[in-house]
Amino acid sequence: MRAMDQITGKEQKNHVILHYLINNEINANWNGMQKSLRILSHVPNSEDIIIECNEEWDIEPDGLIVLSKLLARYVEIDCKFIKRTTPTRILCRVEKVSIAKKDRVSPRYTITEEGLVNVTNLVSSKTIIEANMFNIPTLVRVNFDDYKKKLSIGLDD
Image (cartoon, rainbow, N blue to C red; front, side, top):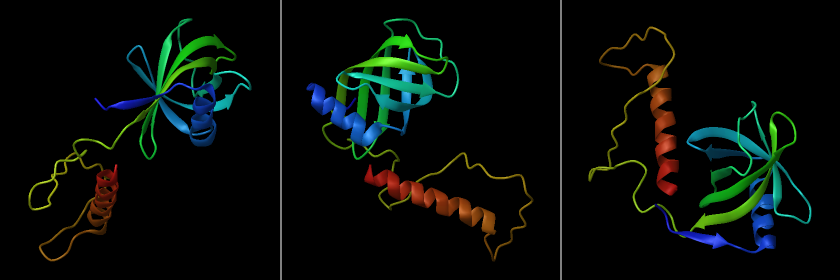
């Protein structure tokens, strides 16, 4: 669990949403269900936002939705369901905006003293790879390069 700074001012909340989160994909958690959605707009002179999901979302009135996004720091927004404007759009009131005080305490990937990382569950296309002792197939090299990039980015989080 990260230590979080609470943003309480209406203008500050609106600033975070309008400058960093509007029209960006964001994760949503409601009652244990995970969804990916987009904050479409902010209702002027209020703390309300309109969010859109790719599919119809069965949510109850007064339900609490937790939106989260990893920017330079982890951002979490607690919203209260107000009403459904279309089958895929929902009007919500922003109750609380929280930003992580500092970076992760522990790294996302465990790194050995030698600087090695153990990678499992590689996903690749179903092609026959002809490998021998003297060369690494391009498909394998590309997969490892992708993981190398992900790991270098993950260390910066």
